[in-house]
Image 1 (tube, chains in turn red, cyan):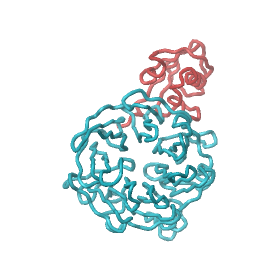
Image 2 (cartoon, rainbow over the protein chains, first blue to last red):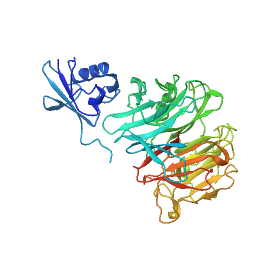
Image 3 (cartoon, helix red, strand yellow):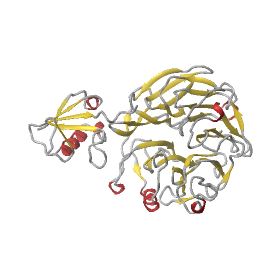
Image 4 (tube, rainbow over the protein chains, first blue to last red):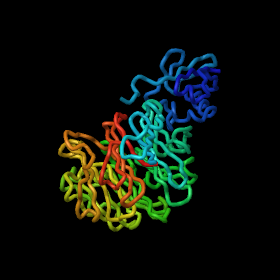
Amino acid sequence: MPVILLRAPLRDLVGGNAEVVLEGGTVGEVLRTLERTWPRTTGWVLDERGRVRRHVNVFLNGEQVREDAAVGPDDRLHVLPSISGGFS
Amino acid sequence: MTEVLVGSKKGLFVLRGDGPGAFEIAHRAFPGDVVEYAMRDPRTGRYFASVTSGHFGPRLMFADDPTGEWTPAEGLAFPEIAEETLERIWVVTPGEADGQLWAGVAPAALFVSNDGGEHWSFNDALWAERVAGDWRPGAGGLALHSICPWPGEPESLAIGISAAGVWLTDDGGRTWRTGYPGLVPLYMPEDVRDGTNVLCVHNMRRAPKRPERLFLQFHGSVYRSDDAGATWIDIADGLPSGFGFPMAIDPADPESAYVIPLIADLDRVTPDAQLRVYETRDAGGSWSAHAGGLPATDTYLTILRQAFGTAGEGPDMALFFGATSGEVFGSLDAGERWFRAAEHLAPVTSVRLG
């Protein structure tokens, strides 16, 4: 199953784990599994339409992707806040 | 001791003190996130904070102790029919039924909770009005920011939306009607003012001792309604400007209202380089300025819509407001004398008393 790598503050919502292993055939499915497994992440990465939030970046094996990208069992997903999203 | 919940561009500050004088920062929660609004439900003692992350979106959090653990509320998300996503939560207001709370959000929509704020549901009927009316946003977005329950009547509500006017329900939100006669949108050409629904309400308050009376800060004037929001009377005469955002009332006195004017929409700072709070005790027939203890010169502050809170009533009513300068000012005698309760905070978005 694919591995999701998380940093703070998302890491704090999954029991402090830097990596979690979750099922899913697409990025969106894996992130929905994340929400079901760790309900406090609900709405943080995907909005209510199921889209990756505008200021969150998801990298699949180093390539930036969106929610519809296919994910294989050996893939690694990094979920990171983008540099564009902070409030000044 | 007085507790002041200060929402800011950089988290929630919980201030505590006896005043007059500087209050202690007892706690800072949600560092780095915008806290649009924070309040305490006086019926249960539960605290709510509307938190918006620049990266991870908006959410409503609740806690029994604002210095402790916060829990996310569920259901504050747009259903599929809305085809939009939640941008921010502007206000949370206790309702009149046990466990009932209302939340106003952007883009303009209403949510209700019947379990003390843990779970929320979307008001479809108001959304249908929004779609049918093609509502337009103001500078701060399409915001449902004012919710005025009717004391003792859980089904009756008046809400204020920027820029879609005043909406009224007497059946718990199953049907809505608008109340606008008397409101004058000076920002529209004269020949389309009568028919427009672009009505930029900035704030609205109900007088609980005379619930058919509402006070309204509009985009360019201040109004009063004596018929539950059906029609409106201009009461800005005597103010240095009709423009402004914050508004408060003394719950004990239905003739009372407080505003903090700004110069105008194109110059949103305090008039005459002074900071003054204006009070009426005759329902807008006249206004008196309170400046004692407030900066009197070289002052160019902006006080945002939700950044003016009160506690208690009558001559000992506490009033606190915050500015985008990061200062918080307080009065413990209904506005007669003021003091600086905090400074050097982040830009203040909301002030409510615990």
